[in-house]
Length: 259
Image 1 (cartoon, rainbow, N blue to C red):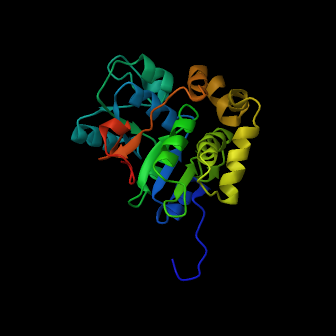
Image 2: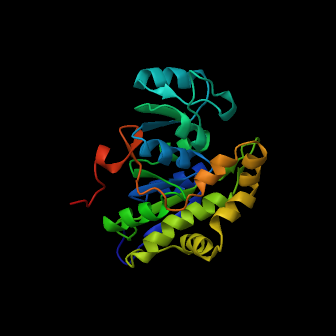
Image 3: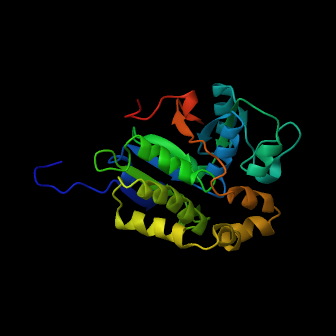
């Protein structure tokens, strides 16, 4: 920082892979929020003790990558079968047998994770938003000295453009609201607005169910995925990207500043 320059806000908020690239170089931690369903799936898998490897493509290269890291490969929601029961569906992951290592293809969530540029990466959703925010605050993140970038994934349209998704705004807001409650974090106006969106919602689960993404999943035959995604604060774990995979903090290093 140059002499006389104002310090930047400790908590910053943006959307999608492009937003992640904009923030990554100036933050110590990047929080990825993709409620329906990448980061919710990560939370469910990590709860079961699985290390989750994000991967950007669901094609032949994903098969090769899974073989290289010694992991099972998640398939599309409608492509599960007895020998491949793992998918991006949180409900399918709960039903599937335990696997210690899983590759989870997700073009949006994985692209955001890959944009970290050396920053710590954390996966957050409505199930663990409060836990993530409190954990980051405990170790001094969210200040001008240790800024956090919270990225709402949104949904990628077929033409590659980004649709800002309500569920991801609320998930990001859950993390930011918890950071704000610590009393030590300084928020950008955008981050404050996201936190306000979460705290002012009288029915987060109902809002997600009635959102565009929620209705698409429910009408498509996956209502349980929406139900799991709206288990507000049900998960106390904080998945951290460590050696290429998301794992609970006990399975990897503590963040900078940890005792």
